[in-house]
Length: 314
Image 1 (spheres, rainbow, N blue to C red):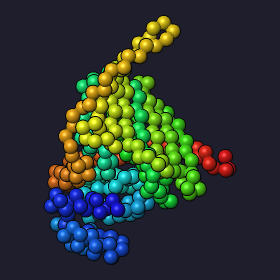
Image 2: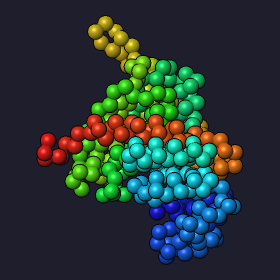
Image 3: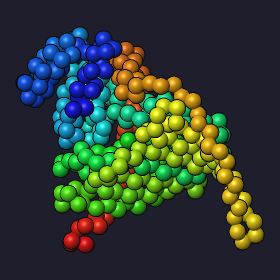
Image 4: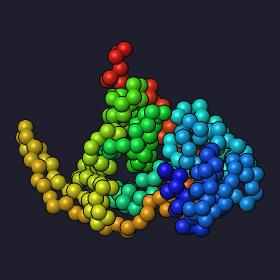
C-alpha cells in the first residue's frame, strides 16, 4: 500500500525509472500504473543508471535488501522503521559508510511544513524554554502481527521528539497491552526524560475508534499544537496561556489561541524531493542514517523496558 504512494510521488516528480516486487503480478501492475518499467531485484543492483532505490517492504527484510543495493553503489531510502534490531540497523549504517552512499529513512512528518514551522517557532523562543512534548498517534486499523506499534508507529514521533530536544533520553518508561495478537503490543504509552528537566510522552495505538495525530510542545511561556487531523489553516496553533503562582495556589489566565499560517504542501512528495536531492548531491537528508540510528537506539531501549500489561506470565 505505501509502496504505491511512494511510486506515485516519484512518478509525479519524473524520478521513477522502474519498479520491483517479490510478486510478479504486483510488479506488472505498478509498472503499468506509473508508466515505468518492471524490474527484478538483480536489475536494481546491476542497472548503472539508477542513482537510488526506495525500499517499502516488511521491516524484517530491510537489511537483506539494503545491503546488496549499497554494495552496488545505490543510495537507499528505507521506509520506517530502519530495522527491527540494532544489529540490522548498524549493519546498514556500516555498509553506507563503507560504500559512501546515503541512507535516508522515511520519517514522513519531519518533512511536513507544520512541523518545520513548529521547529522554527520553538527556536525563535515563541514558547520560551522547552519543557514537555506530548505525541498522540491513535487510529483504527493497519493492525500488524509481525511488528508491534512500538516499531510501526513510535518511529514517527520519536524522530520528532529527538529533533526537538536535540538529545537522547536519560530515562525511559514503557508500558503497553496486546489485545489483538498475544505478544504484539497494539497499545503503548511511553514516558521519556531528557537532560534539562525536559519530558515527553508518546501515546500510540492501532485500535482507537477516532484518529488522533497530534503533537503538543509546551514551554515556559506557552505551547505549540500541531494537529494533523485539522484543515491546513488550523494545523498549527500557538497558545500563550499564563500560569502564575499566587501563594499556595496558581492562577491561570487563558489567552485566545493564535493559528499560525503554514504553506499547504504534500509531505510525502517533499520527502521524495529530499531523497532525490540526497542522491544528486551525496549530502545527507534531515532523516539520514545518523538520525535513524538515534531513533533505533531509543526503540531498542523501549523494547527492553516494555511491560506488557496483558502478559499472563507477569
